[in-house]
Amino acid sequence: MSNRSITTTAALEASPSALVESLFAGAEFGLALLDAELRLVRVNVAMARIDGVAVEDHPGKTMADVWPELADVPLQAARQALETGRAVRDLRLSYSSLDDDAERSFDCSYYPVAEAGEVVGVWATMRELTDERRARTQERRLAGELAEQRVIAEEVFARAPAGMLLLWGRELVVRAHNKKALEQLPDRGDLTGRRIGEAFPEMRTLAGQVPEAVRGRGESIHFEDFPLAFGGEHALEGDRYYTFTAVPVPGSDGQAGVLVVGQETTEAVRRRRALERELEEEHRIVTQLQVSLMPDRLPSVPGTDLAACFRPAGHGHEIGGDFVDVFPLGPECWMMVVGDVCGKGAEAAALTALARYTLRAAAIQAGAEPAKLLDQLNEAVVRQRDDARFLTAVCAFLEAGRNGDGGLRATLAVAGHPPPLKVSAGGDVTRVGGRGALIGVWETVPDLREEVVDLAPGERLVLYTDGVVEAGAPDPELGEEGLAEVLAATAGQTAAATVAAIEGAVISSASIPPRDDIAVLVVRPDPERDR
Image 1 (cartoon, rainbow, N blue to C red):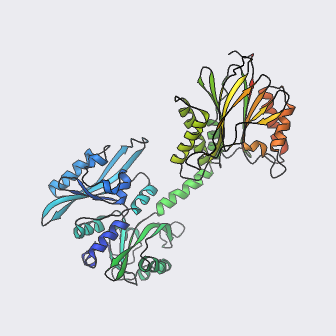
Image 2 (image 1 turned 45 degrees about the vertical axis):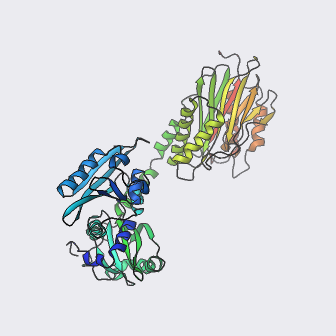
Image 3 (image 1 turned 135 degrees about the horizontal axis):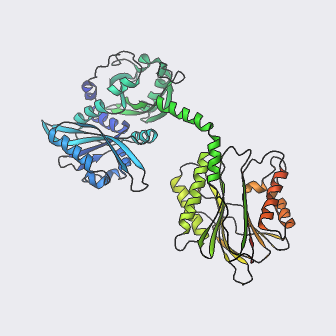
């Protein structure tokens, strides 16, 4: 195939206005039009997503208004294009977001817009390099209009960072294409005037699906990492991968053609698969990460006998989501947390870390209360996570009792977690704290309430994850009744002895290693400990 540049003027004349609209709808990079005073005239949806300002709020604003973090460099480049009439290409910009301090990088170009030989404005393209997947998502959402339709349409088509094919009529004849499309497709000779299925037999099945949806119903279709059996030295197991959008091009009597905008993603797929293989081999690192998410040892709490245990599921090769934390809120108040994240692996570890450190950070704020902290954690999980993972948790404030007998008072809030158990000096077991709803599922946690539990000397409070009562599955589980029997049998014993008895019961109830992590925290008043 010849690599000569393809002249698109004749193709664009067929329906320049419609083609401009289609270019904006299908292009996968940010685009903005500025007037002679370098104020924004129009932007497309992708540009609005990049800068975080609504499309309709751009007109009349300067770049400094929408990009306060890095406006100086783009402004200089745009002014240079305006004053010299020459394009400023491939300008690389980086900045740290004010919201999350994460660095973002962009590739920007600025082109003069001429009318009757006079430069009347500048159009700018912006492509995010931070994350290829994120860039593709932003590129798909481009939409909008160009003020100078014909000139800008030709410029966009020729200089776009994504490949473009204009397919015309029912036979999907290649009417025009840009250089990027030639670079990303196998060399099959001159494409102009040929049916796409003839030039690329590997696309015949796909080409048969496109006309009905795109031309017939006027719908856009998006394909993500779509494999085509092109083969060749760059192929991955015989396939090359593409992410592209097919957009209808309207004509005077219906849908005249299809604009295909996209890019090859073979190397991205190759890297992703290599990363997946590497992650499968990293279970030892994952195990170490699990350890790092738990406190090294429990703190010494005055007037309190405190003990805990954590036992990973199976052989401990995969990170789980159970966690325990105890830390001071002040000289006379301590916070205790026991939680359980849905699932295992790196994603569970990330959510565990988010939960632990969000609670720690929120707890030091004035007016912190257990129920309020769990609600704040729910808000953080919903805001920062876009997967289906959730967690359960018990949050408790522990302080000295009010009776002056050396007892303790715990203020509890429970969110979707097994309720804590209060064990009397005689071994009677009572549920406390309620249930609440899961964290990370709803915008706010339903049925979240607090309960105050007073512990007299000799009484114990037991917090645990569901791996304790589900131990033994698929054989008969230990269950709440079995756990209550263990607690009754350890009446009067220390917190450490209680934890050891629970752990022993879990191990003995299963013929195979437990399928779920277990975490236990036991609290017992101990007036002998120095307050």
